[in-house]
Every structure is written in structure tokens, then in C-alpha cells.
Length: 276
Image (cartoon, rainbow, N blue to C red; front, side, top):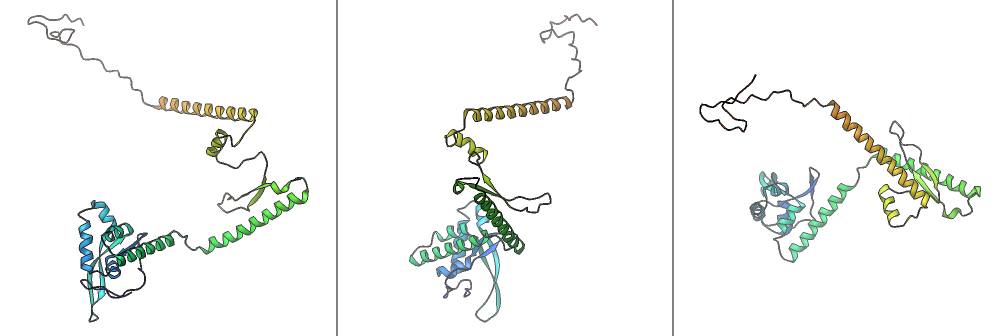
């Protein structure tokens, strides 16, 4: 991509922006914006600094970072200049003020570049060991499914094997190593669902259990609620017994003889009888 020196007009540039990742965030620079939008870099810098007066300080700092960049002048010498590195949000705020058909074209080009780069960041890093494990588990799972389906059909115990459902499960052993995948038949009266979804299914009548099954569910839930309440009570009692005693043995200070029981001073020369 062609270079643009500060204060110069933009030369012909490559077809699309080249963004960079800093601290896990996709960014572009004020020099790229100047190049692609055909603006003087010092004008872009002024526009960015003007945004600092319109934005909250934390938002501005998050979206715009002033950096020192190196470039070569027309004579081939090395020089340094200031520029800004900006996030997608920073670019959108800056480019919002650029108008015209060409400006719209480059806005779309930058947005597409941000989308591509951010999509790349979302991809998992290539891990040969994980890829090998995935191939191994997939082969083992395929073998388990093949064996389970073959046995179900060959045994003849199920007259309508085409409607049989199978559950494929993966697990780990105590050492954290993956175990052989297991394929098993899901019976007609079995469900694979979460507890929250089960409640919704019963409420919406998607699942219609018998009276006995509903009663068993209610009994089991009530028993578990009771057990949990007992555990909470036991913990509260244990905590209370372990707490230090708060009773006070302090004796109230005696009331002076010239102060009445109501707390008001007695008439001069009058004293309240005090017996010790």
C-alpha cells in the first residue's frame, strides 16, 4: 500500500484497507483513513482531536490512541510523525462526517475489512493435537453408532426400528482423558431435555405424564425441598451457636441524688434519698 506523508494529499492506494489487531481489538489508523478517503492527514488528525471535545473522556481514550509512526520522506530519509490508531467505533464516529459517493464507497470498504478481521479472530486457533483428537473421536463415534444400529436391526426385537432414537454421548475419565463415545437407544418413555425445559414442556402440555408420574414428581420435589430446608436450618443453628455471646454484664451508672427519677434536676436544697 502506498505511503502518505503528513500534510500531503492521498496518492493512489490499494483496493482495500489493511487493518491490524492490537490487544485483541481490530484497529485502523488515521493515515489509512487519509489515504483511502483522499484527505490530508493533518485534517484527519484535527477531526479526531475535535471529537475529544464531544465525547466522554473514557470513550475517547478507548477508541482513539495517539501513536508515533515512522515513514520515509521524498528523499528516502526516515522521519517520524504522530497519528491515531482507532477502533471500529472510532472509525465510525470519524467517518460519520465524511460525505459523498466516494466517501460512502470507502466507508463500506472499511466496514467490510473490520468484519473480515473480526471474523478471523473468532476462528479457533489451529491445534494439530486437537484436530487429531477430533478425528479419532469422530471415528470411534461412527463405529459405535454403526454397531448400535446394526444390533437393533439385526436382533429383530424392535418391530419398528425406523423410529428408534439414539443418544450419542462423550465423556472424560478421572484423568481428564476422553472416553470412548457411547451410543444408546432412547426409549419411547425417555426424554433428553434440561430441567427448565421439562417444566415448560409439562406446563404447555407438550409432555402428558400420567397421574401417577405427576404425583411421583411432586413427591420427589417436595422431599428435596424439605431436605434443603433442614440443611439450611442446621447451618443457621450451627452458625448461631458458634457466634460469641452478645449479652452485656455492664451495670448502669447510678443516678446522682440531685436528679429526679424523671431525669430533671430537683429544686435547690432538695435531694433524692439514695439507699446503698
